[in-house]
Image (tube, rainbow, N blue to C red; front, top):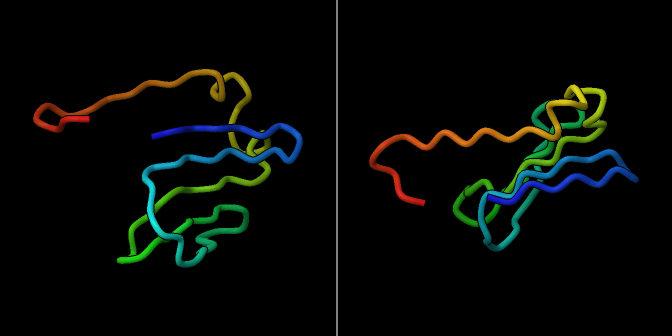
Length: 71
């Protein structure tokens, strides 16, 4: 997974996997899923990120991977 933030447009992007892009789906205003072939979620874009996420939380990442799942 790759997480990027573009402060010029205030957008946070969570990229889950590579794939052939098929379509976008806005699930809520400013929350957009990138969907690929086979209905696989490729990523999530969060617009106006600094208004939705506390700035101090944008600098903190905590990964919790369940036992038995390899990455």
